[in-house]
Length: 234
Image (cartoon, rainbow, N blue to C red; front, side, top):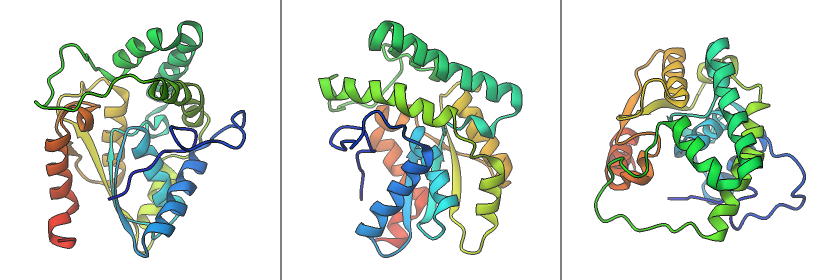
């Protein structure tokens, strides 16, 4: 199993911090990484931003992925015009709040946007605490200031996904939603739109938008079942 630091996050240091980072950059990074660590198509679980990146990997790099689980992708272009504008507007609003008030103001705005209540939402017992270290704060700042822009300026959408799904040897794309995510949350609606585009039903994962961190063990069990890991990779 492989996870990695996206460019600009944690130990992935940018040569030019002022240069923009695009969704295509992220997708190409995944393909380059996979080319080093495996000689066959990978199974990918992408959550939120990771799901949006995974969709671009499937389209831009045929053969890199066998299966992609796309959990509530941050992908405004999947939505109808009105909802797309709302989703993009939320991301721009969070950027503005962050620029004016820092992370203390941005965290509540993100939580509202994703329907998360950290103080009251349920979670698994025995989770390892993840303190808000200076590195994590810097990562969140980069995520909001730079990666939100990568999303809001991107033009990748349904047409590209449909073409990728129709190619020979196409990636199996499995849309996924959170069990407790409110249906009004835009990333939830992106997952539904993706499922409709592909003519399938979304898989339901434990918890809400952040279910992979609130319910990591239950999420892992569901992912293994959906990916067929036990059957295909004993």
